[in-house]
Amino acid sequence: MDSNVDLEAIKADTVTVSKTAFNYVVDEVQKLVDETNVDIDAILPLVKFILDRSATVAILVKIGKFWDAEIIFRSLLEVLSKLLIITTQSDEEAVEKKLNEYWLHIGEIEQLRASLEAEKLVNGGNMNDVEKFRLLILSEDERLELEARNGKDKRKRLSNDWSFNDILLNLTKNKDIEPMMSFEVLHFFWKQSSHIAHGDKVAMNAIRVREDIIEGKDFRDATQHLKLLKAANDACFWAAVQLCSFTKNDDKANELKTYFLAYNRFMTAIHKAVAAESDRQGYM
Image 1: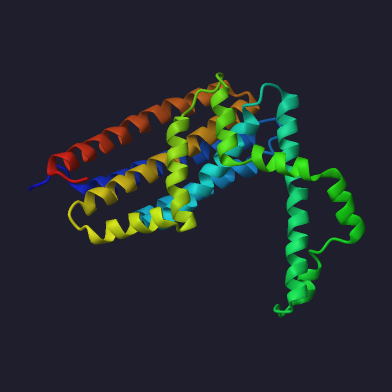
Image 2: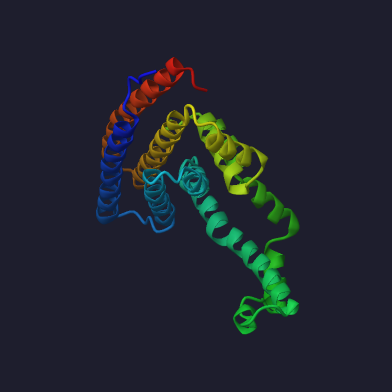
């Protein structure tokens, strides 16, 4: 059956449009950085991480490496959730508390874990350059000091509080948030990407089906192409708007939201056209 859509043209066009939108966000973020008088050092690394990973996702999508893109996409969503839970707190004191948890307390907990793992490596005797790993091992006094500040209950609580699922649960309870991607969609995409990152049965079956069932493969590839490009860019817009919120720049936030809505309408219309044609062709 002849197709009413040119999938290759659609993929090329959406790459171009998405790149233009991405470059716009990058430029606006840089303007914010250059112009703001607010100290943004604590959240800027998270925003930059999201932008950088989105660029990587776009590169992988363009060359058809969708499964690799999914793995990077997962880490992008993880960091977006952390940025959101920090920047949507009710007041500056609550924001500072979250920043301390993220940068200080969790960092100390990871330092304890790294010390333990380095000690195992050194004691295992299977590393060539053990002296470098010895540098990661805390002294007894250092270990006791960190453990005193970060007891088991605190470590467990922070681990739970900063998990993607718990962060999303808390975000959904905040009625003041205007999501730029629904939390249900955010969780669904994260779950899909997590299967790929973990290499579980769901992932293996999805990859096998894509490879073995030739009929409709072009449409399934195009759908994943569109989803990854759009969602990664949506995350960039959201991160930039949160940076605006952090710097109390409402005018810039509104400009970003206006561009976001136009980009979203374009990509959604394309996605619907591809889905409709796929249905007409009888593909799943």
